[in-house]
Length: 186
Ligand code: IMP
View (cartoon, rainbow, N blue to C red):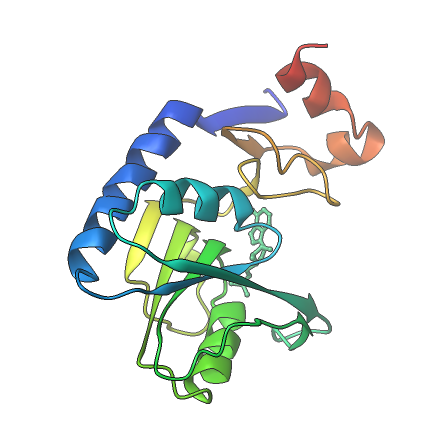
């Protein structure tokens, strides 16, 4: 069996992102939302999503340090935009247990925003521990470890334009460049 499988190709990701952008554009007509990307994984998704919105919006970012079990997290880098009274769209690469998103929801609600919605490219729905509302989601996926289009393994492979499942993580640990040789073709 192969150690890596391309699960969503770049053109399918972009088509789906365009669909989500069209829905968001309809839902936020007459408003100017702030897209808050969760670094670093949400970067490619946020960029493609924003390019297809047919209204003006702002960007901001935050980064988290996760530690320990149970999804404990701390803000490593906070947003700069005053969010009070704003319509916030949290942009995530993937929602897995839901612990990160529920932490972010509580954090933003405390800032008296006008509304919060979440756009996630990927949803590992079967692994959910806490229920969190997901207004816009690209693809439901299984529990394989995924890489590419923002998702990383030890900081690498975020720049792949398609999504790959790693069926044998040990092979990446043994040879971190294996997927690079396969995908970058050099
Ligand atoms: P949650 O708090 O369990 O929902 O975790 C969400 C975070 O886990 C994401 O933002 C990713 O950083 C990470 N994550 C979950 N599944 C994957 C994966 O398949 N590949 C890479 N990162 C993942």
